[in-house]
View (cartoon, rainbow, N blue to C red):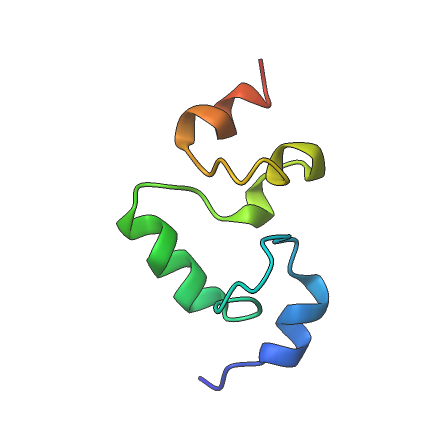
Length: 63
């Protein structure tokens, strides 16, 4: 499967400046999974901007 980085970048919700994985979904998922975290696209915009990718922060959006 060919990476569609440009297409992915247009939809990427990560606001972390200089992220080397921006638009590279497979790398982003692998990176955050290795740290037991969620990826930015699972967070509401105001929560994503905190850069806290923890599962606890993810679940707090729904309380």
